[in-house]
Length: 170
Image 1 (cartoon, rainbow, N blue to C red):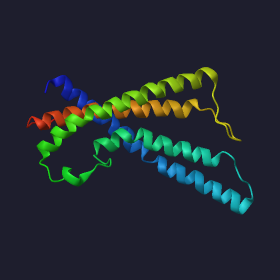
Image 2: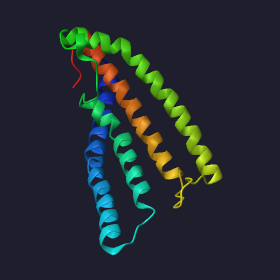
Image 3: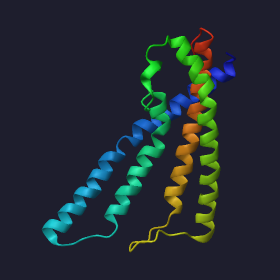
Image 4: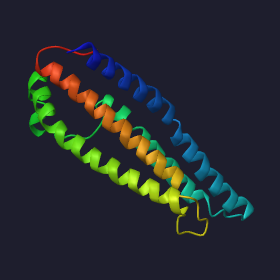
């Protein structure tokens, strides 16, 4: 593989690794929000309208920004009926062939996400709830997460292509 591709793979892996390790802590933020909600409602009879939506937004940021790191760790669900029986080289060949579908799907998601984010920014879109938070921040996070996953899918494609040829990109 050319040095530019090796550098790209290292760069994307490093970015997704750093972001993924940082985003892991959002689960604790979400748990804190839900704990705060439970305590305020149970002990002080103070229900806050923002806690459930904020917990949902935090969880959405967690899985959207962590998608690339999850892909890097090969932690996504896959059908292992035949896949586990194949050699690593054959797995890489099949992954190369199927990665085009994933990248196509991610490009369509990115296009829709950008369109939705621009609409949200232009018109000041707010969620239809009693709290009514602006939607632009979570949509921006969505676009960043999809972009990171697309970049990681391309890096994984290059890794699988190298492995299918009998080489490794590390």
